[in-house]
Image (cartoon, rainbow, N blue to C red; front, side, top):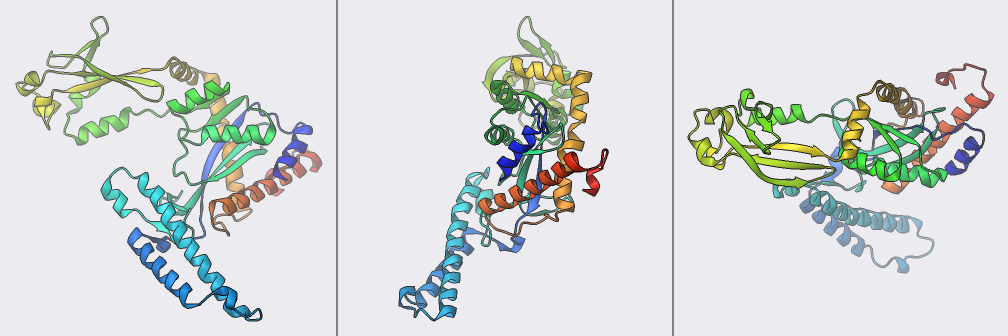
Length: 373
């Protein structure tokens, strides 16, 4: 029904796909924070659920008129299935953790195993799903929606474009998204699909500087204080020592070149406590990033007034449906559980939004505000 409605809206020239705005919003799951348990606790609860189910006997031996007993057996079966699903989801959560300590602390919900703990707009954390909404700029029609378990938006741009194509039969001409989606991987992916990408490239210089400061590196010895000599492909440090090219690595549309000083030079340097405080014997290392040509072209484009003007249109278009669904439809928490059923709720909410927009655009008085639809 959602796709059929998009077809009708497109036939009335209310959808152009010339420019589509992408945004994500966190909506709370139908589960409490207290329902999240470690593997040990889930295993114990699963054992008790199995024992309880066995004590109820064979359900086929239950008299056909004993409705209460059958209902209890169904409830016990469902609880057992949820606990088994929680163990499966816990394995996925643990696999994504960076170290063994974090994996040991991993937890999954016993009531909605597919939910994930996500940061909310108020700064708190709660079991949630990340709802991705794609909105056509022409008239503010939602052309794609998907509920995901992803905590961050960074990997959801390509799936959103594929969903738009699946729903409408064609690719958008341009995708506009905020800094959460703007990374080198997505820049290259959009270029590969032939979709122009407009986004806010977040600089990593401040984060890198903060990391160096936390390691005891004085600001006078941050990477921008080192001088690069392209003719010889070397760096020189503030003390005049040479850092030759040591290695390189490629990752997501960029090549990182590493330059490392001789450990003996650093160990004997008067500035070693300010420059390489932890272990001067290894030699100070700095990196030079060489972007893919497509990434460099994107960065140049985003510095133009035209691209900045387009990006400024993102907020009013992309964030309005999120606010409308939460405020007008009161969808701040899902009624159902599980990724599939949560996705159904999302589709119904966006279908309602599109029909209300259709009424306003086709039959409402000229200039009627969407706020009173």
